[in-house]
Image (cartoon, rainbow, N blue to C red; front, side, top):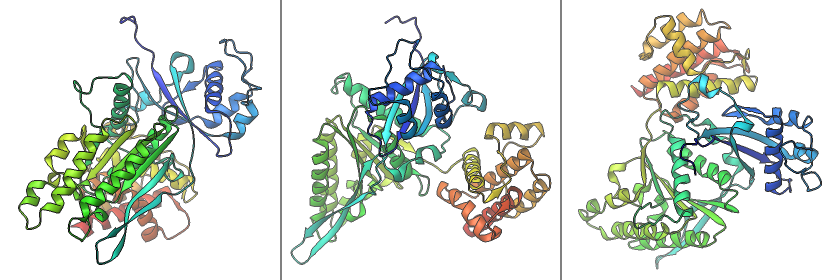
Length: 483
């Protein structure tokens, strides 16, 4: 390898096929790449390219000047691809000294197109599973009664229930992409046979922070994303979402046995080399509570058994290539230090910033416009443009408003905001500032548009201006209720 030659950027694309499609994935992948390079398509990160791609199919000749053979007659005719391609998404781009992601890129950079011939295309083909997660129960015989305990929810991925969730996540520190890169690194080190005695990784992630910040949602979305990205490596992807609280039996000494049974089920999946297994343990502090705290109690032995069983199984699973353990916690300080030491990444997920809240509310308003509930169809600008507009009018770049100030402040902007996307966006940014000052969680922010409509619009449709005023009132009510 010539160290002086900079590697080409790699652009990630995700192509979703209909459930009825039986065309081999490799043929679909070749056809999409051939068509994109034939027209030297201009691709922008984090854009839906489906319609543009389908429209370009008619202009693509099967006689490739790139030397690629025609794929018609091999089961991948253009009309078949047109019928079965449901979604073509341009995702992130990395390598080649340039990186574009959906959290740190400026508006200019994120809209900068790549041409298909200047990048390497990594095309991931997938079909959604329509089955809902299966509840897995186990029976515990304590000598007095026979209990049925919910152990876990068993997901088959990629799931229709989780499709699109990843793209709705908004974080300030690109934590979603950092987690994705963590898994890529773990796979790379395993594939290259890196000596685990010299460089250690345990395949364990811990996301911690206050309730409502999106930890569990991020884990589920990451699992769904990995099932798409790993489709060429593993035939199946399974996720076991563990019900931590139910594993603690009210009967002495049963909890350790139940944890062991849970991991027996996990090992059944892991032993299949064609299956990638993701274990999600929500509120892991229920299982990995500090043993030092347990020793100070009257009945410490059951808690200690649970922690010891959990740590032992983690140590065994780290030798397997096809497994990832994701955990969440609302109380990191309650987790045993031995478990914390085994987590490769410990990531704090805090309340969203004003910028992130603006992006969340902006996407919610665009969805209401799409649904015909809010009109006219005004495109609110990205947060970078809003900050520039605020600076140009010599206003502060951050608005920290009390519940009393926000209504008065909003009235000033609402008067000038009729049909003016810039004025509307400034009002929305100020509303986001009030959410931040009121310590609203991401979960609460996502609920605000619904509450605003139910409490203050009370009509099938509303103008953007009226709805924003309703949103301001909903924020005020929420903040007041927390004071």
